[in-house]
Image 1 (cartoon, rainbow, N blue to C red):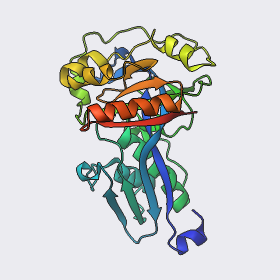
Image 2 (image 1 turned 90 degrees about the horizontal axis):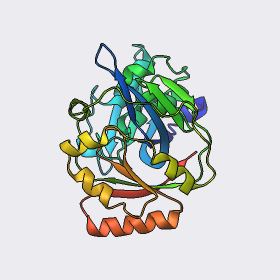
Image 3 (image 1 turned 90 degrees about the vertical axis):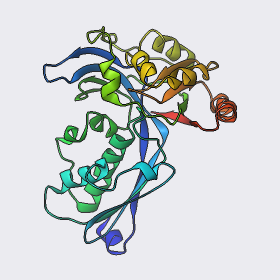
Image 4 (image 1 turned 120 degrees about the vertical axis):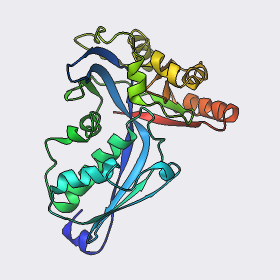
Length: 285
């Protein structure tokens, strides 16, 4: 936001797009307990919204369908992102977070919020982004990227993925949270094969889905033990090119070739399961 815009009280706003793990291979575990991952990560065109406007103090306002469960204090990654960027200088800003994504859902809602808050506050305060954003969470670095990424290590090693074909995603959450530590605790093997060293490029959604089907989300089976409804979500995506869970759950995604097919699936699933969160979104390049 420009200095003139700030003086006029104009808000600078942006979307915190959902993060989707199309694959998630658990390849090891460090001595400090952190798991090593190999994951193909994309953004979906649905997310929370954050606006930043001038204020004498740092304050956070939250609304939206899932705003009631979001904390307003330092437990919220948006507040922690602001404090990391501010570095104790006491700068002020009014942050308005509209929570459209379910929490603890495996689609990086909090991490995407933090990444977007960092970008907006960086412009608002005229400060460079900090180098240690991973302090906020392992998914925050990948959420700062606008293109698909291969994420390795504990999330710190990011490599741009080959260009992916146009696809649509149907995202489903049974409105149940899957606690990441509990899901990992039920993981039987922590030393599994990574994805191929070189990721292929694809020109069509069916070819891309066929390759994804040869890969895995290692956390899907343990997540079903924690939230059995994950299995129901996957079953409801029987018409998708591929159905899989994202992250540590409980959100699942279906990969579709066109918007029409994705929207048709949303209507069918929403009618059958009115208590679920279900939406269609383009896979962002």
